[in-house]
Length: 141
Picture 1 (tube, rainbow, N blue to C red):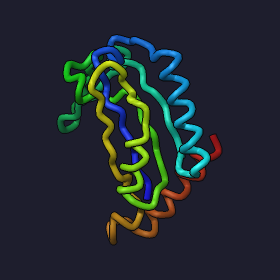
Picture 2: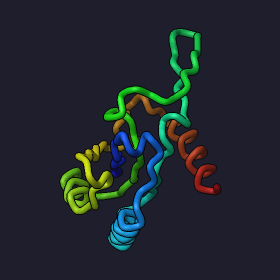
Picture 3: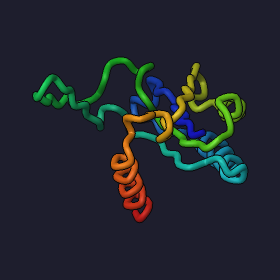
Picture 4: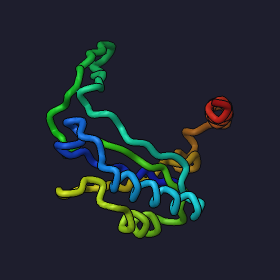
């Protein structure tokens, strides 16, 4: 099972405050643990929403909205993608994580990633083939 582990933003992360050397060291050590356990697929921190944009869809119309975005607690500061046996295993690993926003309350969200079999009959053999081609191309980069 794959899970996306989402680190929620804080006022500091949205203000562009960089993590301390201590936090970067603790997170580096944690990422090494995840790697040694064989569960880490990907991870990264995200720039503040002031450097981002959203595209709103309304029928055929597209509207671009530049950041920053107001609801800090709904924004993402970083993520991991993990391959684990269960949601409970993901929870146990998150509980071992250093506080990503020292000095304040922080929240990490755990969301399961869809797998091909989750889509049932709607995911036709042709669509599966296309998905495999796309993933093969992604893995070349």
